[in-house]
Amino acid sequence: MTGAICRIRHSIPKELYLKLYNSLFESHLSYGITVWGVVVKERPHDRLFVTQKHCIRILFGDLDAYLDKQATCARTREYGMQKLDQRYYEKEHTKPIFSRLKIMTIQNLFKY
Picture (tube, one colour):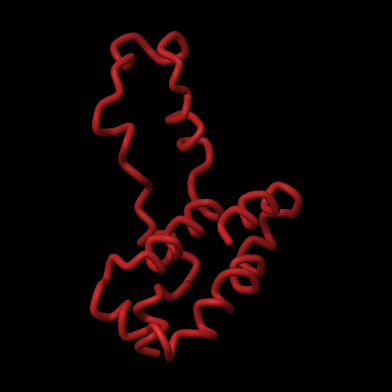
């Protein structure tokens, strides 16, 4: 699902990203929530939650920071930044994005 969203996002305007998320991703989450919602409640770092965060990062994350991080050629990075340290492997926090767009996490969908 995230691969399809990643390919589609370049073809549509940014104003429609929330509708794209709701139609392609959140609809699938809410459809089966009664079946697998208990599993997500017991394990907060379940694969479904990780996939939801990945989808949020694809659509609403900071693309410039991601692309800057992916410039892995040592000649393109600043002097002193040639070695990849822990900052390279850190991912963008999704909690501010969930709050800003008023999107419910998978755990909150189950509680609702």
